[in-house]
Length: 552
Image 1 (cartoon, rainbow, N blue to C red):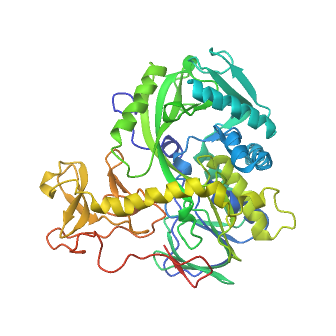
Image 2 (image 1 turned 90 degrees about the vertical axis):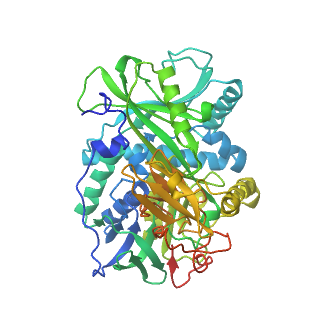
Image 3 (image 1 turned 60 degrees about the vertical axis):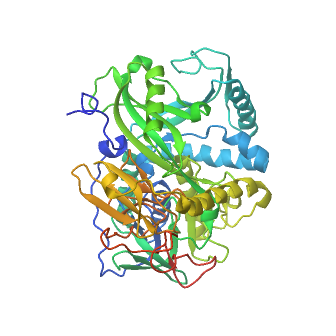
């Protein structure tokens, strides 16, 4: 049955459903390949980096824990624009106009780079030029939008400020107070685009393997990466492009926050579709764009609505989805919801992505993370920048220093960093002290999950619709925070750093690389003192520096 035709929304990404791709085999456990560069992660940043290196003659191997472009990139809204909400006023206020201009130059170039690659490879990815828009519906946001227009112009972007109510210039089917617009940006199908890029990497001698999760990094000259199945890769260079770094010796987990956001896909009449890719900070953020329907009808298109940011595991989730659905019905009464999913982004404490050497002692390891929800252009920026660093180009991009992960801005980052650490501490300590969410397994209805105290420690317990109980340790295998149940996506999520697990404990999303341990509810394990620990101490990670190994 076609989603939306009486079946209800499909709980999966439109991008993954409409561009399934060809599976690639994993790295065999017995393999010991030696390459120039191993790239961890086959999303936007990882594949853009691998393509630049492969095309310059480097031997490249890409390790992907799941499938190509099936993670963050496969769940994005896929807006390719240098206008990014209120980014330039924030950068100008925090770092000065010079940083804002460099950022604008980098992302404006990334927009055109995507268009160039699309033409070069003749990629069928529904690429269209559209204006990008940031609009305001309240007086406070109107002031912020006006400030953004000024900051964006100062950064070199040819933006237009649209004043007063009306719809003619905004391309939105409802009135707004004010908006800033940047023309000639891009909407496209991100997974179709990246699948073509992956094939181009392979045509130039690169290799991409799927379902191969990296779990150890041994730095040196050369470096070694060990996969979950025991396979080992020896490489002169390692690029960590796993969205949230799966190795923590750079201590970036103290400067990164993971946030999720709901996405709804809905069929709407073409004559009521927004002409722009538009975003408002109002209502806790609302973002809209459209995409074509491959099978018609011609008078309908797909509206992609995004909003309701939340920390992973910070439930309940259903009310957030309902608020987004209510906004959809109010603004687009004829909308027919067909798809629903969530995306996850990492936000850095100073507002600029971390792209460059992995830590102060790094010689051959590099990282790309913290794209602040703008990973389409950010991934292209990362690809160009990291390829230049790996190659040792004499003239790397002018925005190299701005992105260097080794930078320290104590005053600029202090507020964000302290808030982030307070949130982590609140969950790490407070979640252990809170009462259990259910008294016993018998209290769980089919299709529900909760933390239940078993033998002095909390267990993550889910009863599936058939009545079978799935019991796991509640302690995240990354740094030991307690996971919480996401009832909409049927997953266990860590609110500290965003790791996600399925109902049987398998890792769905990092930084964790190890599954949640199963729990035997008849023979309780764990601490008996109420600390919610497991046998032994938490496996904290190496201190910063080029230690012999890094286990996630």
